[in-house]
Length: 250
Ligand code: IPE
Ligand code: IPE
Ligand code: MG
Image (cartoon, rainbow, N blue to C red; front, side, top):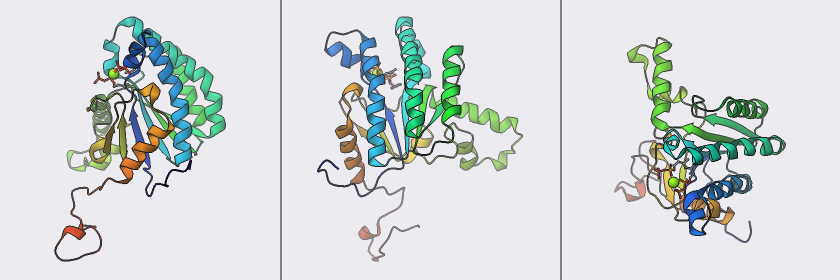
């Protein structure tokens, strides 16, 4: 693998907050939209790297429910770029065996983009090489509210509500929770991304702006993940006095 040491554990599910497009553009005196264009183009590069590293599930935060609050010209530009990307990339996604899923709401999205999203999901549903969740018009709290509405509408009794029931009513139903959440652009926050699912994810923040985040940056993030000690609330027995060999509580 390019002379780089192999990874001992590969996350099953990597989620990325693709942040920093605007600053990437501004740094070189370009309009913010040029950054968004470079950002959308970068998705293909990272998708290829994810396949190379054997990551089965990738979730990308493309547009949040809060991003509607941006100037309307920027929002329009972003929508145009997403439309273009779906037109341009769908056949390649199909050929590569990528299964596209949509996380988020369709409300507020133009009928054209809704159709493109629906087609992309529909036409790739049987692909198995890599699942690509596109978090578009996505908000973690809104997702939980929608899940609760569905659970109530199904007549679920209070005593039957479990964590598993809630998980099964989210957009990520049936998928494992993310093991690793990467945020580019340096900010250390979730910005309403996967707030339920990422409860035990490892976090990795890089100051690199998203358009500059390449294969080697992804590898560096995966290496950092490799070195993390995930305890899930338990204790390691190596540190316990009584000398078990595995984690206590399995
Ligand atoms: C992320 O880049 C893309 C979207 C939120 C759509 P930003 O546009 O937030 O870039 P910065 O954070 O302003 O640099
Ligand atoms: C998070 O980035 C949303 C996406 C990357 C799509 P933002 O730039 O919107 O987040 P804040 O506003 O800095 O929290
Ligand atoms: Mg930002």
